[in-house]
Amino acid sequence: FPTRRSSDLRLLRRTTRSVQLTDAGARYFESVCRILAAVDDAESAARAEVAVPTGRLVVAAPSVFGSQHVAPILCDFLARYPAVAAELTLADRIVNLLDEGVDVAVRIGVLQDSSLRVRPVGKTRRVLVASPAYLSSHRAIRRPRDLRDHALIQFTSLTPAPEWRFGTEGTDKRVLFRPTFATNSAQAAVGHAERGGGIAMVLSYQVVDAVRRGKLRVLLPKFELPPLPIQLVSPESRLASASYRAFTSLVVEKGKWDFVKL
Image 1 (tube, rainbow, N blue to C red):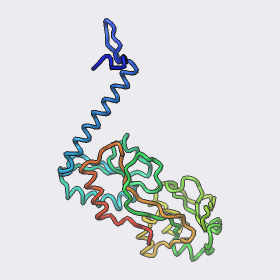
Image 2 (cartoon, rainbow, N blue to C red; image 1 turned 180 degrees about the vertical axis):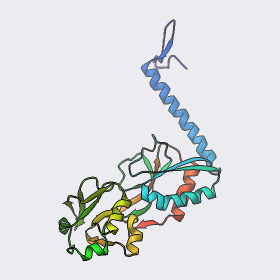
Image 3 (cartoon, rainbow, N blue to C red; image 1 turned 135 degrees about the vertical axis):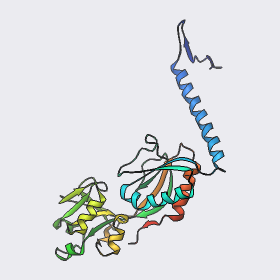
Image 4 (cartoon, one colour; image 1 turned 90 degrees about the vertical axis):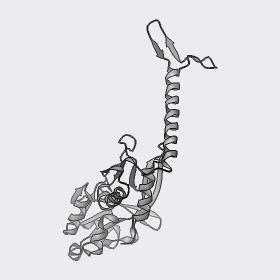
């Protein structure tokens, strides 16, 4: 480790009893470590180009989406690549990929973090739903403001504040309300709506089966905001492993994740 560079920059502070890094030396050491780590990643990536996926793959996804759509594909992935050990984390929150050691995550919505590697894989809608029994015994709903006369179910993971947004002719309208039932569980919100408990705003993938079976009806589709993207994300600072590339390819191959049409 050099004590001086060509610019006569002191990197070490020596005494008769110890040797310590100067502030400049500490920054230099951190930079060298990052360079060496990048070299290791580059070598691993080069080897992975021809390698069969091995090692550990950690995947994160929203709870309902992960259990219904990600888990089956991950099972197929493990059957295809038995040398991989996988972990699936389900959580209705933004998982910190680096801090929690996640290799790839499913994220729904417009991304705020520009430091991510992004692969679009589908779309979903924000939909209002209610059961036929509820709709037959309550006032008709023709526009967003009519909702104030109804029992409303708040799915707090989608709309943390008690307000719903709607779009009409390029405008963004908000309806404030007092929920008769609030929950951070999509399954609980959908289940309450199916039982005639009121009207819920959820994501279309969460109710696609219930709508197709006639247990729920979609309300005010003309007032919906644009669909939300479904994406696979991973840290851009981390070079893509063979397992990551194989998993994302399998999602593209098998994942039918377009929920715009119900």
